[in-house]
Image (tube, rainbow, N blue to C red; front, side, top):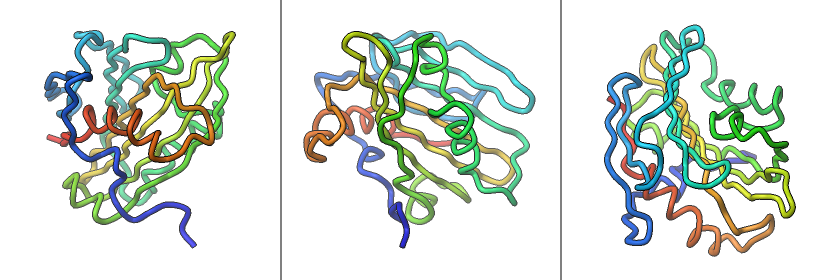
Length: 197
């Protein structure tokens, strides 16, 4: 039995929220276009490591951020999921700039692959794709809760890792409808128009 669905998750559905305004960002340097919340850092930080170029925009609250990493060349014979799974195995949480830059202890509370294959690949116009979402806590009194979303995609020999982290008031065990209404809709407002150039 699969632990994930073979569909696009609801948080990838486009939505426009009056209370969560966004602006369009098309970044040819990393080959992606998406929406950025208004009030988040306008100019991205760039990191280069080996064949990976990553641009990240800091959010307004601790642990919030958006990042786009591109890997060229990507190995079509290797599962795209290793890009996230290896980071979780080594760090205990997804390797995303908003989290590594938080300089606080991070506890991964929930994390799962919630989409892979068709129709996700068709929706993103790529050869391979997977999505993850979860919840983590940044230490503090009380801890800051952060919802994390990751989109992995590969087209030919180019692969992308999109990471979005949002502050949340939904603790573990929150009713899924409440998480959808509070967190997933905000993710859809950012990632719902995602496309790869």
